[in-house]
Length: 149
Image 1: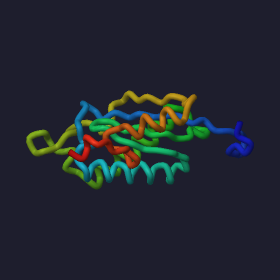
Image 2: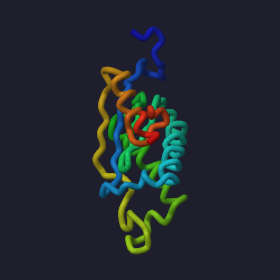
Image 3: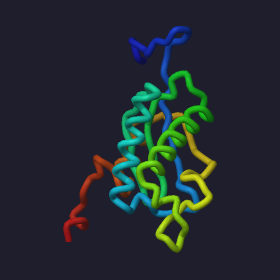
């Protein structure tokens, strides 16, 4: 049991969740290193901007996972704030992503994220932390012998 919970003006506590946001049309944009690194930086900016505590962020080819504290936000509000912040700034800094397919773009007449999302409460922090560590692009991804051959 936590002895010193987070305090807000009218509430005390914390709700740690794992959030998953999938890219629209399953485009594998996070295999592009520059896109992945910028998206990572933008999520960190969003966490700071909205004062959201987080523990871990990881990417696969077409989705992002994160462990964060929902604080006083609802699931819909949390998803909207994070996805909106990242998409707006990513398209502003990488406008080629919005170009037509034949011009090398991915999201013409569209948004970045699939409207669906998954935000689930965490009952076992270590389990979800290890799950994020096993993602394709994790800052703490463990190396196996096969990755050096």
